[in-house]
Image (cartoon, rainbow, N blue to C red; front, top):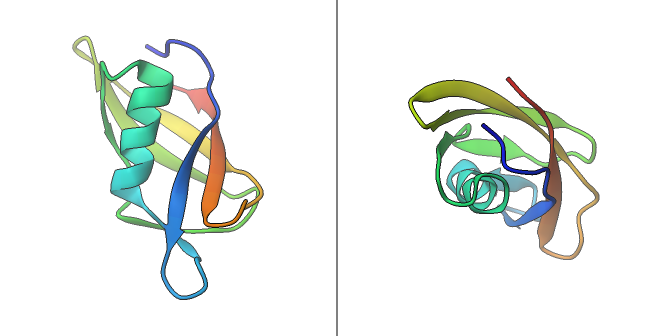
Length: 87
């Protein structure tokens, strides 16, 4: 289901930049990992913590699965994250 592992980033929001919008994470994962060919749904709001993982659901080519993503070190207002596993 996954095209290739990719590092993607999203902007943080909230007071002090501590939350990631799930819709932005889903959009970045879909584009960066699945080449825009999947439907990705992540938790609505994801609290930022370096090294923290979160899970999103993925649907592509009639198959459903999950992708586990790890957050990297925040760079300014952006949080890089990378896929850890696809199930």
